[in-house]
Length: 450
Image 1 (cartoon, one colour):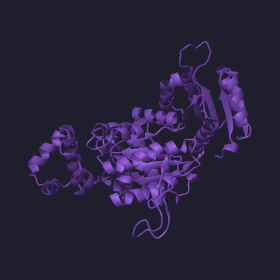
Image 2: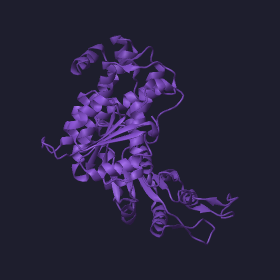
Image 3: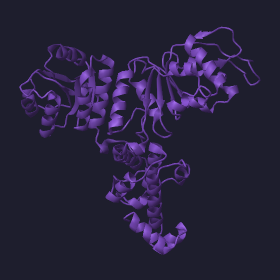
Image 4: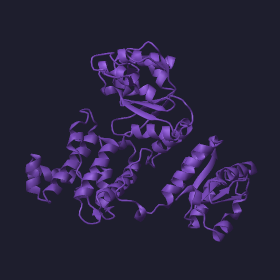
């Protein structure tokens, strides 16, 4: 739904808040209704349909629970309202706001807010809540850069941290294993920042050779080296007034670190072959799969550079440590690839869900995405079955040799299940492919309750 067509109800006992929101939204939406007394919510919802409800977390009411917002959120859900809900909270009530997301709220905003960020939040919530699947264009891949999905406590904490740091110009360091979505986090920070309409420039600095590093980041003048046939702007200049995302920052050499540190300290770049420095205004976001402990080793990384890039850090846990996110992510990818490959609406069965939940996903969200894509391509009918899910042998082969015994057991169990399914339940063939006897395979079937 377009913002200008929306009908919005704002419930807050602070008249200043109601006035501020009404003035902000009156030219942006179709209608704004404000209400100070939450006791009138039932009457308001019975008289009119709203597209969005903005609901305060605390009221001066007789309920006196300290979390009135949750009470009224539940009441709205009981009334079967189809309206999207954004909770209004003060910084001290963030934990309650996070709980509200688990109980059905679509998002929350923290007082005081930036008007442009509030409008963007409202627009995104409306867009996500009212677009039925039948209206989606199957030719559009909906894996947008700002599409972060997660219901686990760690992800809700990350969403909260993004909301807090995005409007600032603080340098951000994102830590996480490969495939956890560091690029998505970086894009989300940019899109919720004051620089959202400005350039977002990504550089995989870990893949740059010593010779290319300065030319790629700082640019060069014509004739600066053999292949410099024309003047070229570097990535710092390209990102001026916007955001520069340096991925795999933990893999650059000490010499490269010194060059980078100098630019960050002076906020100036000098192209190779030039004498004149150019001032740059960038918001810096860095990411690495190297742990902060390893990064702090001065033989590997300069501590003065760590302090420069790490005003705030965001640590993304691996998917195996946030199991609550697996099914929502899987359903999202199922919907995306069903549309992409012109398949009917597909639902995973219980065995498919159990199989996903019992797998360790060494390749994290990226592996889950590719697993679902392959499964959708091969699936027949409208049900995604356990046998359709084949996990990547590449990721399993690359797992660390010191994984715990429980992880090894999980890998063995999943391998046995996959081989049996591939052989249509024929135990003799499965045992032969696994390189064990039928008796040994039966013992493992009993051990893993298969």
